Length: 97
Image (cartoon, rainbow, N blue to C red; front, side, top):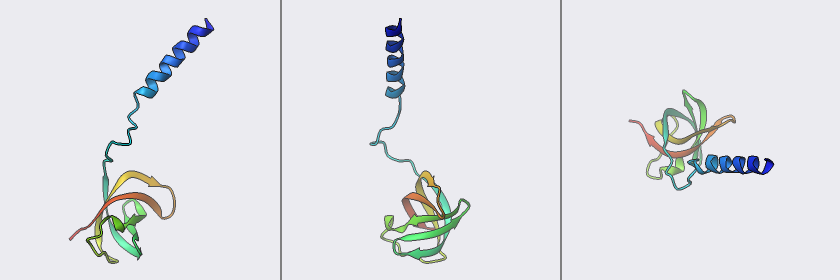
């Protein structure tokens, strides 16, 4: 009896783990927010948005020279790390005219 229970649990665990969608080759879908640049330090900027103050990596857009006060649209992976200011994985940044 014990052997059958172990086999059933093992089969259930196999199906649960086999059905996950954690493929690292899947491209990330970006979420977006608009913000105003408050401070720039090298390639990093602290921006103010409806989500609060967030650190944004400006190096993902080498073609644009950003300045304090610019309105920007930021694409990120959807995860906001709980720190102050909050941190994200920046996927895209563009100036809003």
